[in-house]
Image (cartoon, rainbow, N blue to C red; front, top):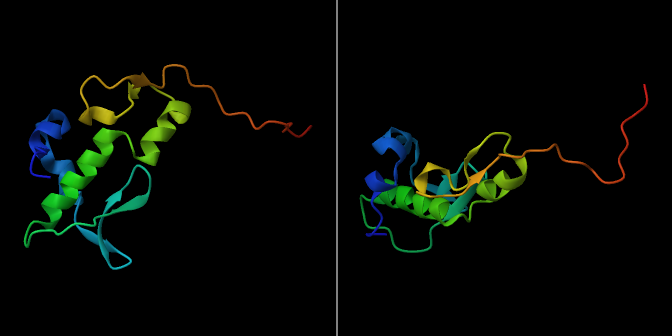
Length: 113
């Protein structure tokens, strides 16, 4: 985690959005909340005393940059406007949302009115 630079990874060099990210507990395990997938990322390594929030932020940034967030995976299909697939955290991330079409449930017909 020491190699993750929060300032360098933050869009627009604005760390304010990180103030809401803090170390939490999920079922007794240290965790950080990924709002893009509405889930907790459990942290299974020792967290140095007094660095909980910093480590939680770094874990979340690394997770978002890797593209492993389920919310990011859904962007390909559901994004209605152009945006970087991996968000502003990854320079050169491909653009998704340029050709959105509503989903179609196979075999479903709209009711006749």
